[in-house]
Length: 215
Image (cartoon, rainbow, N blue to C red; front, side):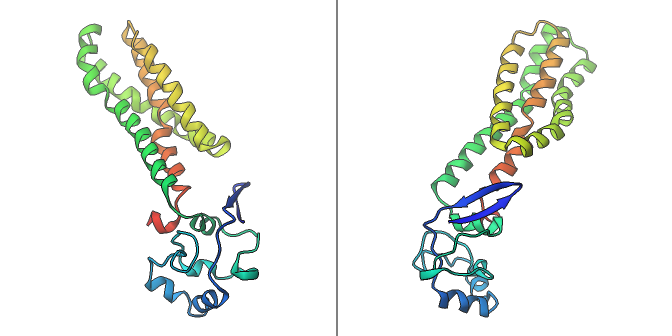
């Protein structure tokens, strides 16, 4: 098992990951990693191991155990992520995060089709229309630092789920707004609660991908 410590948490990679032979690893290390640099698509599958794509130079500086397997020890976070591989989980994660980002886009652009109806019902002036359009973004600005702190403290997944759930409840009750001032408050909290879907979401998605796929 390959382990990595980041922000006080322990990340464990699957124990089935097996490194190439000592000779292959030493050859890549002694050559300064040029083999991996000139062959960026070289995978551990091609070396007789699991289907991942970490360059051989990731192995530099780490002892290989008996039979070429890694000893249970701490390795850098990015190396551990690379050695866990890339597969169906990452594809589903990308789809899920894409849907989460779509909810943010719908909320931010909803004023475009809500404003004409609201202007008629609330007898809004030009200043009122500008205020209603801006309240969503004011809520995002006021809450962005708070969500970043909560995401780092309690976990990004929990923050994303809680934010979307509370935003859904707020939107539901906002549909019963009978006055302009009440609807302005609803739009402010819409922006504040959906904010994690714009800033926390990308950090959460990037945590599961190695530098090979980020680049």
